Image 1 (cartoon, rainbow, N blue to C red):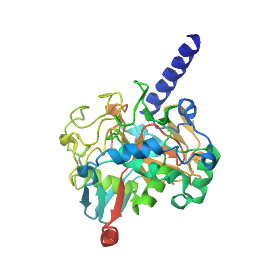
Image 2 (image 1 turned 90 degrees about the horizontal axis):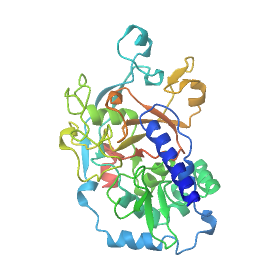
Image 3 (image 1 turned 90 degrees about the vertical axis):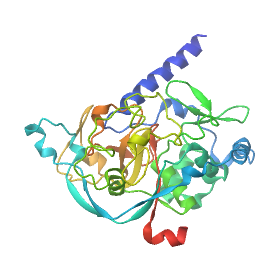
Length: 344
């Protein structure tokens, strides 16, 4: 019993750490809780390892609406802010939210909804973690070295069934989380996109899809103050992800994309590359920008269910290592308009 209490205490502490990090602009180390669920090396995975997952994929009918794409017309976006004004302004911004830049975004087609656990399970069941062709060379080396055979929040139980680790409910059956957004690292996002012949979005494309032509509005839905449960799953509305096919219609963007704010941060393929002569701050104190400018830290946008309303500003971004098994990061993919005829 004492061992169970200790394990429960470790889980609770891990939850606290990640909930805090879910609302803070900082780098998050790999979770000790999820590391305990790591499997054996991919070199020794039995052919039957994914058998129950494959069966679950076959038995679960896909939800067509989740595959919908929306057209994002070309346009100009503003990324970041002038952080040098922090001391002269009533509005506070972390240094990593700067500098202010304008960028022209080409037209593209973007998924209206985030990729779900069920869709990602198709990739896993198709031996996506055992096939180097879908992974960058450096990513594949990480997969092999860390013996990664599934998302860090997924658990394969002794009976062969699969579950998903949650912050407040322990492990729930994967079938229950089938329509939740899948939480993965950027290297896993890239592999899935290679498998689907699509690509992750950029930070600029996120800004264009989220705020559209409403350049002066603070939110995708306009100027109304953000409310968890009305505009999205944020500010602790639910203490876990929610099914993507039950979106908050009042939080929909101008171009018809759902959940761009809430239910999980959104991965972008944009490397964090701001001016190196400044130092950055986070809620934990100063961080040398040189540590973030290694070409391996990428931008996350949006918000998770554990993100405070006060952090839902346009310029807010997280900077996270590409291979970080971050427990709050979802993704959606993009197809450039000119490639639509190729990918269909």
